[in-house]
Amino acid sequence: MASTTDQSLLAVEMAEDEEDLYRALLLQANQEMQGTAKREPQSKQIRPQPGFCLKTRTSNDNKVFINICRSEHIPAPPELSEQGLVSLLESEDPSGYRVPMSLGEPHTEVDNNGNGCTAYDVAINTAFFEKIQTNKLFLEFLITVALEGLENKYSLDLSREWRMLKNRKFMGSVTDQNIRTKSRPIIQEVDRSEVPKPSTATQASEPPSSPDVPEYRILAEPAEGHPSFLVAEITVPKVSSVRSLLLDLGEDRIVLWARPSLYHLDIYLPFSVIQEESGAQFHRNSKVLTLTMPVQPL
Image (tube, rainbow, N blue to C red; front, side, top):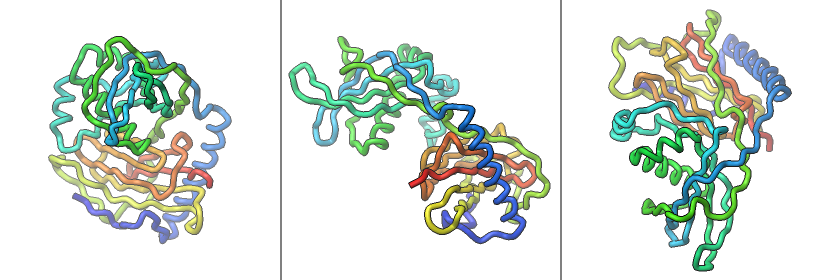
């Protein structure tokens, strides 16, 4: 497993040629960001359709209802067979398969006994919703992912003992949700011989049985105070094509997979970034993936 050359998330020392490239990337990202902002809306409202309703509880024994909804505007997850899902769940890190979903804001409702309760709306792709209707394994997987997503977003502690309501498809009333029009930056592949090659890059003759953690560093511009941009440089010397890379950029998190089982990186960023305005480039000569990420203003 490769070790990171720079443990600090805010490395600011660079060679002159690296700094020139760094400045050029920031300028390019800024120009693309301004152009994209004029051409495309960053989010849109959707009205999910009711699907089914789950009942569970928090660690404090408060009743919680989860409305699993469907919408054609939510992207579908990658195609995966049932055997593929079984193999994934048996692996050391099953997080490589992600289900796009929209987690709505909590809303207060009244249950059949007249008691107050909290409901959450979780919207998934319509085709994937139909798939989980006929496949119990995918259904249980989806519910587990939804519970974890709600826990992470709203600092909850939800019981894994849940019950699907038979006579109710939705708790409360269906409301609109805002979804992002772009969920992650598209990785562009470029061939630039002037990009400095990492001196520590090595080639492996065979893929490892488990993915390595690639070397990386994250730069801030400006280095002092609240930055305008973050630039992440991730060295992946065993990757030969951009097709091997799967990138998921969150507001404060980078998750990168290099297939098959070459690299896996999962790190948190020191500042929240604007996902839909970020860019990514893979430099074939240097084997460096560069992410340029505008930072959310204070």
